[in-house]
Image (cartoon, rainbow, N blue to C red; front, side, top):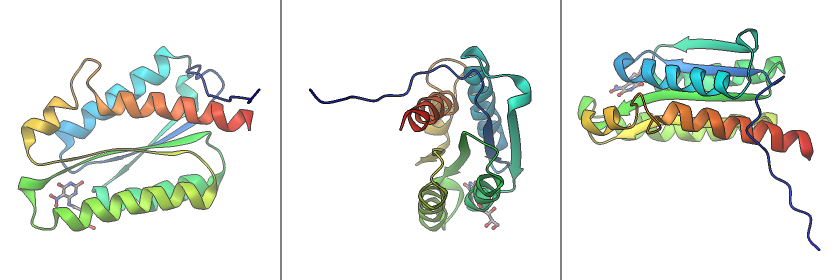
Amino acid sequence: MAKYIEGDHNAKGLRFGIVVSRFNDFVTSKLLNGALSALKEHGAAEEDLEVARVPGAFEIPQAAKKLCSSREFSAIICLGAVIKGDTPHFDFISAETSRGVGQVGLEFNIPVLFGVLTTNNLEQAVARSGDNSSNKGRETALAAVEMANLFRKV
Ligand code: INI
């Protein structure tokens, strides 16, 4: 019989680093609120949550790497918003951000979660950063709790 392992959503005793970019703050602040509420609702203590603010999505992997190297966190949650209408270099920023976030997680063997919206327009970004369950910050935070618990079991 195969052995299955899976992380649960109990955040008690886990420490989370959150990197959030300031560009498109009206969206990213909602992602941050979604992530913080989800973590606290699932048992995380306020003192176990650390938020690092960076200028834009491009800087997220750099700060995530710094937090990973401290070895203080069970998981790192990356939040940002790259909106296509805003920039001709949308493709470069979104590609670099996702590549960098993925690379940092693999390099440090710590769960590093990607909650960076990459949308064609503002409406799509607003729809994914709502006050309800359709909030990418919330969804990413829950995935971080699950991954942190999975890593504890392996
Ligand atoms: N940063 C974002 O987070 N989202 C964007 O939509 C965006 N646009 O449109 O340009 C953006 N640019 C800034 C970039 O992430 C860096 O902060 C900047 O290039 C300095 O390195």
